Amino acid sequence: MERLRLKIVQAGEPVLRAPARELTVEEILSPEMRNLVELMRETMHDAPGVGLAAPQIGMSLRLAVIEDRPEYHRSLDPAALAVRERAPVPFHVLFNPKITARSDDTVAFYEGCLSVAGFSALVPRARRVTVEYLDETAAPQRLEAAGWYARILQHEIDHLDGHLYLERMDPATFSTVENLTRYSNPAKPPK
Ligand code: ZN
Image (cartoon, rainbow, N blue to C red; front, side, top):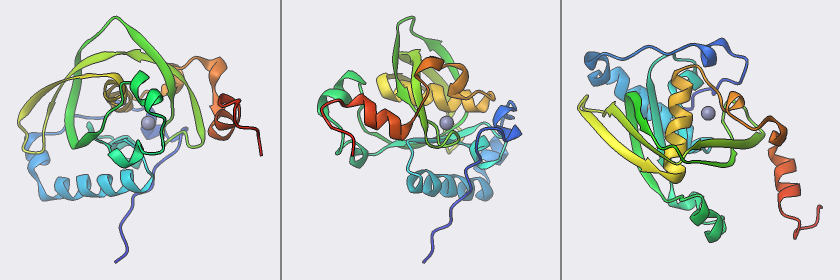
Protein backbone atom coordinates (compact mmCIF):
# COMPACT_ATOMS: atom_id res chain seq x y z
CA MET A 1 0.00 0.00 0.00
CA GLU A 2 1.31 3.40 -0.92
CA ARG A 3 2.06 5.55 2.08
CA LEU A 4 0.64 9.03 2.17
CA ARG A 5 3.10 11.84 2.42
CA LEU A 6 2.60 15.54 2.79
CA LYS A 7 4.52 18.14 0.83
CA ILE A 8 7.14 19.96 2.89
CA VAL A 9 7.16 23.63 1.90
CA GLN A 10 10.46 25.44 1.36
CA ALA A 11 11.87 28.76 2.61
CA GLY A 12 10.09 31.68 0.96
CA GLU A 13 6.64 30.15 1.48
CA PRO A 14 4.77 32.79 3.56
CA VAL A 15 3.29 30.18 5.96
CA LEU A 16 6.82 29.59 7.33
CA ARG A 17 7.01 33.24 8.43
CA ALA A 18 3.57 33.57 10.01
CA PRO A 19 3.04 33.00 13.74
CA ALA A 20 0.88 29.88 13.93
CA ARG A 21 -2.37 29.81 15.89
CA GLU A 22 -3.08 27.84 19.06
CA LEU A 23 -5.25 24.74 18.95
CA THR A 24 -8.31 24.23 21.12
CA VAL A 25 -8.79 21.12 23.26
CA GLU A 26 -11.65 20.09 20.93
CA GLU A 27 -9.37 20.33 17.91
CA ILE A 28 -6.61 18.36 19.65
CA LEU A 29 -9.03 15.54 20.49
CA SER A 30 -10.67 15.41 17.06
CA PRO A 31 -10.24 12.43 14.68
CA GLU A 32 -8.99 14.87 12.03
CA MET A 33 -6.13 15.84 14.34
CA ARG A 34 -5.20 12.21 14.97
CA ASN A 35 -5.11 11.74 11.21
CA LEU A 36 -2.97 14.85 10.69
CA VAL A 37 -0.47 13.77 13.37
CA GLU A 38 -0.17 10.34 11.71
CA LEU A 39 0.46 11.97 8.32
CA MET A 40 3.09 14.25 9.88
CA ARG A 41 4.77 11.26 11.50
CA GLU A 42 4.93 9.44 8.14
CA THR A 43 6.19 12.56 6.38
CA MET A 44 8.90 13.10 9.01
CA HIS A 45 10.06 9.48 8.75
CA ASP A 46 10.08 9.58 5.00
CA ALA A 47 12.13 12.82 4.78
CA PRO A 48 13.86 11.64 7.06
CA GLY A 49 13.87 14.19 9.86
CA VAL A 50 13.87 14.34 13.64
CA GLY A 51 11.13 16.97 13.86
CA LEU A 52 8.35 18.48 11.78
CA ALA A 53 6.20 21.51 12.57
CA ALA A 54 2.74 22.06 11.07
CA PRO A 55 3.74 25.25 9.17
CA GLN A 56 6.22 23.09 7.22
CA ILE A 57 3.30 21.20 5.69
CA GLY A 58 1.47 24.46 5.03
CA MET A 59 -0.73 24.52 8.14
CA SER A 60 -0.41 27.52 10.43
CA LEU A 61 -1.12 25.59 13.63
CA ARG A 62 0.89 25.27 16.87
CA LEU A 63 1.75 21.61 16.55
CA ALA A 64 5.00 19.72 16.07
CA VAL A 65 6.09 16.08 16.03
CA ILE A 66 9.51 14.89 17.18
CA GLU A 67 11.31 11.54 17.02
CA ASP A 68 15.05 10.87 17.02
CA ARG A 69 15.26 7.18 16.07
CA PRO A 70 18.16 4.96 17.18
CA GLU A 71 18.69 3.94 13.54
CA TYR A 72 19.62 7.56 12.70
CA HIS A 73 22.55 7.26 15.12
CA ARG A 74 24.08 4.08 13.73
CA SER A 75 26.05 5.81 10.98
CA LEU A 76 27.27 8.55 13.34
CA ASP A 77 30.54 8.63 15.22
CA PRO A 78 29.93 7.87 18.94
CA ALA A 79 32.17 10.82 19.91
CA ALA A 80 30.07 13.13 17.73
CA LEU A 81 26.89 11.83 19.38
CA ALA A 82 28.39 12.29 22.85
CA VAL A 83 29.53 15.88 22.30
CA ARG A 84 26.07 16.74 20.94
CA GLU A 85 24.42 14.98 23.90
CA ARG A 86 22.34 13.17 21.31
CA ALA A 87 20.31 10.16 22.38
CA PRO A 88 17.16 8.56 20.93
CA VAL A 89 13.89 10.38 21.59
CA PRO A 90 10.64 8.39 21.19
CA PHE A 91 7.91 9.73 18.93
CA HIS A 92 5.75 12.37 20.52
CA VAL A 93 3.52 15.26 19.55
CA LEU A 94 3.41 18.69 21.14
CA PHE A 95 0.38 20.97 20.91
CA ASN A 96 0.72 24.66 21.80
CA PRO A 97 4.29 24.20 23.12
CA LYS A 98 5.99 27.02 24.96
CA ILE A 99 9.59 27.34 26.10
CA THR A 100 9.25 28.46 29.72
CA ALA A 101 12.95 28.38 30.63
CA ARG A 102 16.24 28.16 28.78
CA SER A 103 19.77 27.83 30.13
CA ASP A 104 22.26 30.66 29.73
CA ASP A 105 24.88 28.30 28.36
CA THR A 106 24.67 27.85 24.62
CA VAL A 107 26.23 25.31 22.29
CA ALA A 108 26.75 25.66 18.53
CA PHE A 109 26.44 22.75 16.10
CA TYR A 110 25.55 22.39 12.44
CA GLU A 111 21.84 21.92 11.95
CA GLY A 112 19.57 21.73 8.97
CA CYS A 113 15.88 22.09 8.21
CA LEU A 114 13.59 20.13 5.91
CA SER A 115 12.28 23.54 4.71
CA VAL A 116 15.79 24.75 3.81
CA ALA A 117 16.61 21.55 1.97
CA GLY A 118 20.23 20.84 1.11
CA PHE A 119 21.81 23.40 3.45
CA SER A 120 23.28 23.53 6.93
CA ALA A 121 24.90 26.07 9.27
CA LEU A 122 26.29 26.42 12.75
CA VAL A 123 23.47 27.50 15.04
CA PRO A 124 23.98 28.44 18.69
CA ARG A 125 21.16 27.22 20.92
CA ALA A 126 20.51 27.02 24.66
CA ARG A 127 21.86 23.73 25.99
CA ARG A 128 18.80 23.12 28.18
CA VAL A 129 15.16 24.10 27.90
CA THR A 130 11.92 23.58 29.77
CA VAL A 131 8.85 23.19 27.56
CA GLU A 132 5.19 23.19 28.51
CA TYR A 133 2.67 21.75 26.06
CA LEU A 134 -0.46 19.67 25.66
CA ASP A 135 -0.09 16.02 24.70
CA GLU A 136 -2.36 14.00 22.36
CA THR A 137 -4.95 13.67 25.14
CA ALA A 138 -4.83 17.48 25.62
CA ALA A 139 -3.27 16.96 29.06
CA PRO A 140 -0.75 19.62 30.13
CA GLN A 141 2.83 18.31 30.20
CA ARG A 142 6.14 19.79 31.16
CA LEU A 143 9.48 18.45 30.00
CA GLU A 144 13.10 19.34 30.56
CA ALA A 145 15.53 18.58 27.79
CA ALA A 146 19.25 18.95 27.22
CA GLY A 147 21.58 18.61 24.28
CA TRP A 148 20.28 17.61 20.86
CA TYR A 149 16.71 17.10 22.07
CA ALA A 150 16.74 20.66 23.46
CA ARG A 151 17.99 21.83 20.04
CA ILE A 152 15.19 20.01 18.21
CA LEU A 153 12.60 21.54 20.53
CA GLN A 154 13.95 25.07 20.01
CA HIS A 155 14.07 24.53 16.24
CA GLU A 156 10.48 23.22 16.03
CA ILE A 157 9.00 25.81 18.38
CA ASP A 158 10.76 28.52 16.34
CA HIS A 159 8.78 27.27 13.32
CA LEU A 160 5.54 27.97 15.21
CA ASP A 161 6.66 31.58 15.71
CA GLY A 162 7.59 32.05 12.05
CA HIS A 163 11.34 31.64 12.57
CA LEU A 164 13.84 29.57 10.62
CA TYR A 165 17.37 28.74 11.77
CA LEU A 166 18.60 31.23 9.16
CA GLU A 167 18.21 34.17 11.54
CA ARG A 168 19.85 32.26 14.41
CA MET A 169 22.86 30.89 12.49
CA ASP A 170 26.40 32.12 12.16
CA PRO A 171 25.95 33.29 8.53
CA ALA A 172 29.60 32.70 7.57
CA THR A 173 29.11 28.96 8.21
CA PHE A 174 26.12 28.55 5.87
CA SER A 175 26.95 25.66 3.54
CA THR A 176 25.43 23.10 1.24
CA VAL A 177 25.24 19.71 2.94
CA GLU A 178 27.45 18.39 0.14
CA ASN A 179 30.21 20.91 0.89
CA LEU A 180 29.87 20.37 4.61
CA THR A 181 30.55 16.66 4.08
CA ARG A 182 33.37 17.42 1.67
CA TYR A 183 35.25 19.92 3.84
CA SER A 184 34.45 18.92 7.41
CA ASN A 185 36.32 15.62 7.20
CA PRO A 186 39.85 16.31 5.92
CA ALA A 187 40.79 12.66 6.49
CA LYS A 188 38.48 11.70 3.67
CA PRO A 189 39.78 12.96 0.31
CA PRO A 190 37.15 14.40 -2.07
CA LYS A 191 35.90 12.03 -4.77
ZN1 ZN B 1 12.98 23.18 10.39
